[in-house]
Image (cartoon, rainbow, N blue to C red):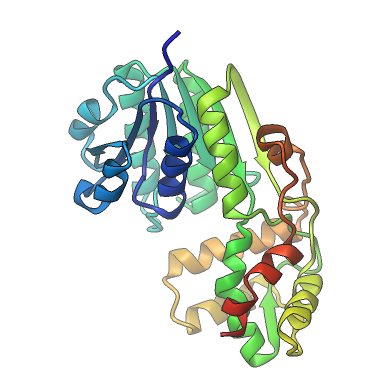
Length: 293
């Protein structure tokens, strides 16, 4: 039997690009990567991927972009406006996948999504999952937990000031490395059957007290965690200049962690890749230079 044609949306992003590269390296067969600007992915085309233009804000571009694809990884877009635009983009992609004859959608979702009164990052994931489930296609919801890689953005400031502020209380969060998520997504895109939901987590949840202690261990600089109320965290992020929608999304993730929704532990990474997921400690040690810089 011939190998199915695999399609990865958002191939110009961090995760999408890595999934395409992983599939090409494994000899997965025909691999299509879609992006708004194909000229930026000439290197992937040179490696054997077919790069197509796709703009989720322009549904008329999606029929040609998805044509011939058997299985699709739908990478959630990076729109953070509180306008409903991101959910509209995802719904456009799902509708186009159905029309194109795609048989299986793997969707890059988030941890424990739930509906919210107004458009939000986590609400968009919930309603996108609903749209995919209602499409009649087979699917795999990949609920990636918070990337350990995000610590490389939050910890340098904490290391410089000696204080890590969060609204997580002291509940655990099961960080997972982007590399592990890439490996799972590539394997699922190739092999998953039926309809399933996978929580993609690291090996064990860690509290922010533990994250601060690990940052101290790795860098040799004292760091302590200070738990803030959600509103104080929101005000602090706004004062730091973050766009309101992004600040709200980060606070919502912290609140979800404080309520225990990020402390789930699964064997998904090992089940799909054959290796244990990378721990936060190992990740920070491997990226010590970035933290110290």
